[in-house]
Amino acid sequence: MHQRVLDLVADTPRAAAGRRTLAWIAGGLAAAATLTGGLVAPADQLQGQAQRLMYLHVPAAWVAYAAFAVVLLGSGAYLLNRDLRFDRLARSAAEIGVVLTAATIATGAVWGHLVWGTWWAWDPRLVSSALLLAVYAGYLALRRLLSERHAAADSADHRVARSVAAVGVAGFLLVPVVHFSVVWWRSLHQQATVLAPQRPPIDPRMGAALLLAVAAATAAALCVLLHRLAALERQSAPVVRQATAARTPVRTG
Image 1 (cartoon, rainbow, N blue to C red):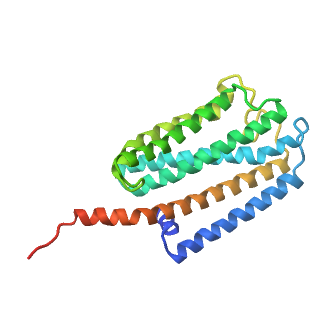
Image 2 (image 1 turned 45 degrees about the vertical axis):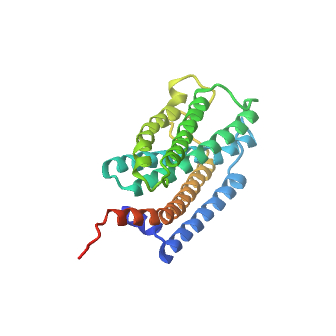
C-alpha cells in the first residue's frame, strides 16, 4: 500500500495519469451525489429543504476526521522512522483537514440559521469543532513559524518536523471529543442518524445520497492529498539532494 501511494505521488507521467483518473472518479461521484441529493432524495419532513445541507456538512466533517487521522499516522510514523515523507504526508493532510473543518462549521452555521434561527450557539459540537480547527490551524502556523525561524524549508527539515510531530499526534485527541460531544453533553445538535439503531432509519434515498456524497468527498480529498504530496516532493527534492551531498565525504587522492 505504501509503495502504491509513492507511485501515485511520483513525478512521472504514469503517476500523473493515475491522479487524473482519480480526479475523474471524484467528479463522477460528485455529480451522482448532486443529482441524488438534489433531485432523488426527498426533503426532510421537519427541516424541509434546509436538510439538504447534510450532503455537504456531513461529508466535510467525516473526511476532516479522516484527514486528521492521517496527520496522526503520518506524525507517529515520522517520530518512529525519521522519514520526512511521513512529515509531508501529515502536513498535506492537516491542510485538507483545516479546510474541511472550516467548511463543516460554515455549512453548519447556515444550516443552524435556517433551522434554529441563529448562526451560532454555544453548543458542545460547535465549540469543540471550533477548537479542533484552532488546534490544527495552529499546527500549520507553527510549521511556518519554525521554518522561518530556522531559515529552513518546511517539509524538508527535521528541526521543523520534530517539533510539530507531537502536536500532530496530540491534536487527534480532540476528534473523538467532537464526534461524541452530542452524546456526552446536552446538545442542540442532532445525534447520529445513520449508525443509530434506536432512531428511525433514514430514508433509503437520503442514505444513498449521503453515501455518494461521502464517497465523492473522500475521493476528492485523496486526489488533493496526492497532488499536494507530489508538489511537496518536487519542492523538497533539491533540499534533500543538497543535504545528502553535504553528508557525503569527498574523496581526495
